[in-house]
Length: 280
Image 1 (tube, rainbow, N blue to C red):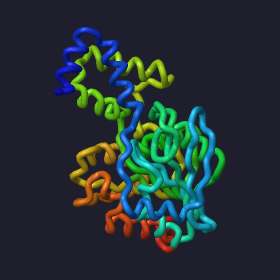
Image 2 (image 1 turned 120 degrees about the horizontal axis):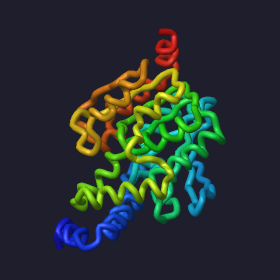
Image 3 (image 1 turned 120 degrees about the vertical axis):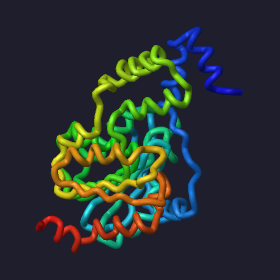
Image 4 (image 1 turned 60 degrees about the vertical axis):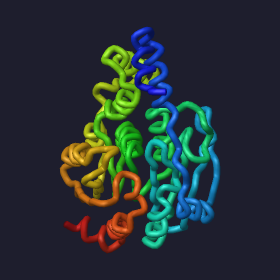
């Protein structure tokens, strides 16, 4: 069955119903299979659960360093995605916290949204002070929105790709279903009415301006097919003092366990690197 043909016919009959189906699509992430290194990192984790709205959220901690790091996965991801990076942070003296977002990983599987996950990130930021935050993909947008709302202060932020406009997220559904302008408008209205935010003006390049950061680094693959490197560059350009590292050969997801990226993060989070960077 050709999904786009079915949706094409349906939206001629009922654009409203089609927008509802598309909204459901962007409210239920597709969880990816776990790799061996992701499973092994969970074995070493201190596990707990917290209640958040209608969800049981699985929380994971590693290490007992004096410095504290928070890691936020992307849409369709999970805490274990950072399994190759976490040992490096522990070695550099960090206690690492991450979680499976609503409808992600081992947390409760129910309909969720971009904004709901941002609210969860905000909850973590209010409960604990972190020295380092590392984000991936849409997790960068969730986190920057939460940090912006809190006028958050952070010593170091590492962004492993980020979208800029929220409409890029909606665009995934538009392309997937082949939505026409009328149905797209109804989908945007549904997001607007259920979230309380104006999706047309939501930009991470705006969020990040409300955050006080000492060190911020963007890492993005030149050939990323999920999020264009140009989006991260736009966000980076809105920050006066930021470093942008272009990589290649890792793609969007594989960068999380790429030896090159893992070593870059190990260097960026080392005590010597931070001392030198802050003194410049």
